[in-house]
Length: 122
Image (cartoon, rainbow, N blue to C red; front, side, top):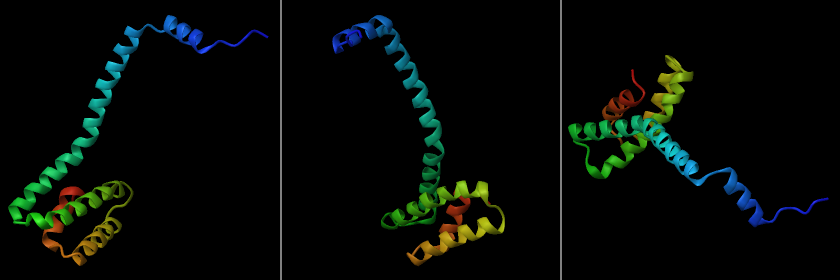
């Protein structure tokens, strides 16, 4: 049985098979693609938050209360996925339950209606 390679031999063999320049170039390309995909995935969430901020400004929501409304927006974004599974009465009940939860926390139902239409639609 031949002796197994040591760490030094393995590193030399890997370096001979895979030139460093090629790996750096590949990593750079992968990073560019990953960054673009990340930005495409995050853009709808950021856009929703920016629109919610504009709604808060227009409706006069104090800065101290905006955190609760942002929490509503975050939970409503999870209902976007539910909108793919549910429709009509079922989706309306999901939204109403979420709104009722936040009304108990002291939120204005009119603002919650506007935010739910922004996030989920309809």
